[in-house]
Image 1: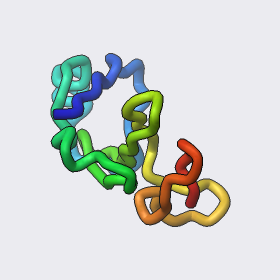
Image 2: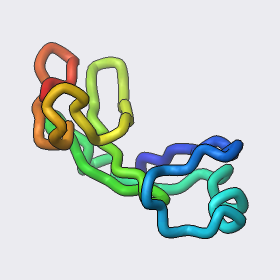
Image 3: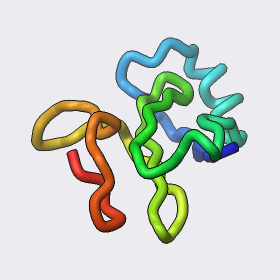
Image 4: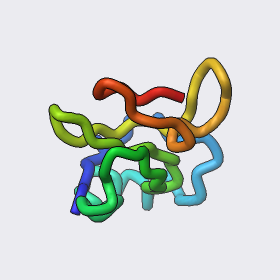
Length: 89
């Protein structure tokens, strides 16, 4: 199982999040499972954690997680592929 920790927010919330700020601040500091380890292979995996869209991928260095958005194309990075240990949109 792949888990990530969301740091306690200081007024920075995802756009259009559906939680109240009090609920967000109460649950954000904890670890949450976002994918099964066996599902994170040589292809990017899309996940959502606390209304934040994420992309998860595995390289020779381990597992990485980032926002699921290509900044230059505006499409989900989870639609991309892995090439030489790099996530390509």
